[in-house]
Length: 474
Image (cartoon, rainbow, N blue to C red):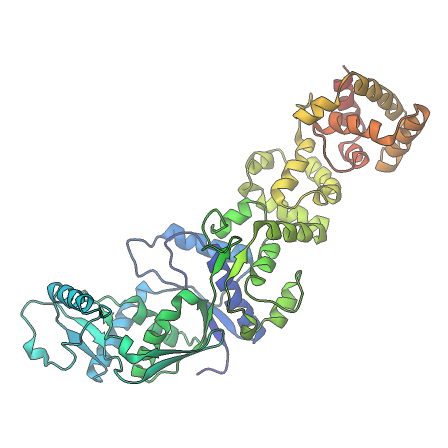
């Protein structure tokens, strides 16, 4: 086996990159980086009816968005069918596998008899030692492995510990179908061996396959890679993860406005931990990640925790970087494409100036977009219900006074200079600052919440600010 750690991520292109698949890819990627190894990508596209090019593209896009880059070109399992067949036929020549000519009727009869006798339905090995000369005419055989019949097969798992499977429970399973195509069980082993994979990190729903795959490795005399079967992700209520819990494609999280760095951090903490550390940099994850620290129990997906963590990441991201991420993500956010058409250099500069105030009030990029809409609003501003309720007759009277005070501010028009003018007006009118700030906010943004009202004034500029206030007084 290679001295270099080689991991692999091997999704089936039958849909999007599932969030559980994203975590599996992350664990493989982190362990490869942690050990100075490499992660390979294999697309398990042997199911031709369900596999599609758009699904493959979605998987590659999801991995790239998460920042999980693989070494070399993605490998297509389907394109390696001749190699899978070659290995199966070699096993027959080595007397480690055999051609089986049992008909569907025979297999059905076998299953029914086993059930009637209270045994698990398994193939009974009737062609294991028969001469192929006895084969019925016109029947295309399958190839079955000669599974060991005594003792046990041990899967030495770095997460689950030693998993022992009695060999009497392993029937002579099919490795090559009658049409010459490989079974999943066989193709995976041949591919992992040929790709030089040293460590297999995958969901524990594959644990039942591990013993059978070990039988193929042993039959070929190949080293069995280190196995690590990680628990699946459950919903916050402990039930199997479903769409209502967050069992969505990775691209759905981009559309919901999560940052890739925050999602990575959240996913790594699902089933793996390093002390009490919650927020960790990518360098920390790479340095700390050990397979043995993966929990045996199922992790629980919690949207509230993800959202809170994303808020932390947004506040901790530099304004310029967050602006760049936000603009790149706009095409994926609800209403973002329309906004992109309005993003002139002037608007971009305003957005940058407002970023500190916006990100403090947003947990996702969707919320950030919502908070930034006042910049793009056209006069006269549409009011939301709460803002409309704020601007009653007495509030408009206060607004008129605030308008007069702000008209005295000429140069510079800044958050500090406008705040001073409003504070002086509030003191002179015997009003609390909030009594002035609330109607101002409503008039300037059409909302009851926004970044600091003086930041809003500074970002909008003198002409636009006074125009919006005037509209509401009139």
